[in-house]
Length: 525
Image (cartoon, rainbow, N blue to C red; front, side):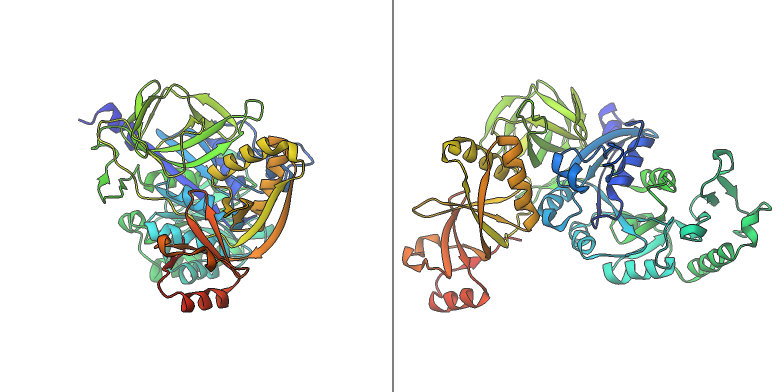
């Protein structure tokens, strides 16, 4: 007989929602929360006129722009499962935050716009999922608008992403002529825009509509039936094993905005999504969620000022094994220091409540006074270990930054330190003058940095772009001489005091390497 702890752990389903900007990711998150009873009223992202904003977009700049900039965490119960959703930024300038978030989940839901198909950012995120073998469930959204042909979308999914797809349901019509979906898995037809009592129509043994219905005589129904016959004969076979290994993506069609097909998706997803999975340590041990016994977890995100009134910082922890109890002693593996955790929280976007207990698979927030760093491991037992490193990116854009008002130097350095610890931007300084240089993957990161410095730390900053640079770290720092510093190969230090060259371009880097063959350079991801 399984223990209560084991049952609790096996009931967890933790996933990230990934997509290209504007594919409807935050909208589908809202609808899932609605089904989970976590919210009563779903706002849409671009809710400026109504004053309603999406629950998962809580930062001021997100409300202004209608995009997700940070990864939000939300939790609810549904059909006996405890669901943890991580809503990620869709914008490519924030891919580093998204990549780290993907390390904290057991499966991913990919939202695809039916009109646009697979877009560049989706492909990038998908590759990270494939790299980690994360099961991927696909929701093709916006069927209530005109889009690409369903067969074309499935073909694109398979060709561009290199994964097999199994349509769990199939659209009948599209756009203004969208009549509903043929649910292959549940063997029924779900009607669009109809009374709840008439929502589902039965299908017979031959797979045809089992009742007389006006839909039967439409060309859209005939087309859907032809497509389904083709899928049954020539499509992929359904395989739970392949879904678990990330080799087969179950595909669902629907419309998040009109809340159509979302409940069917959620219920089916919960059947096939994996429970919490083991994680690997730096010395290649697998930590099993149940068998390991003791608490362990890692910090994948740090967020400052979630509550501007309290100027707080929260470290987001993915619990990997065992059980967390408020007031317990934990050890931070990096420093070997033990301390009592008295302040812990769970999330519904910006609504938080104190959490007394959590188990493997859950995401909790620990109040942070500067103790934690991204990638830190915490353990509850006597034996400490470190989970494998989280990805860090080599930045491509750089700016020199100063405070407009020199009297605000203290707030300036405090703000930069906190935002750097969040992983929002990367910090460098020149060797002798110690000028602050910031690095980012995309320009929007700088805009968010500037906005947050002003609103959260009351510091206006001046940013002087120094353009694209190729950043390279050095394996054998002891062989580096200061004379190697030049305008084309700037020598700086990162936040950990490691030396870094910022090369002007590929040519400058090649020229440097030819002149200094003994210097071994390397990049991050």
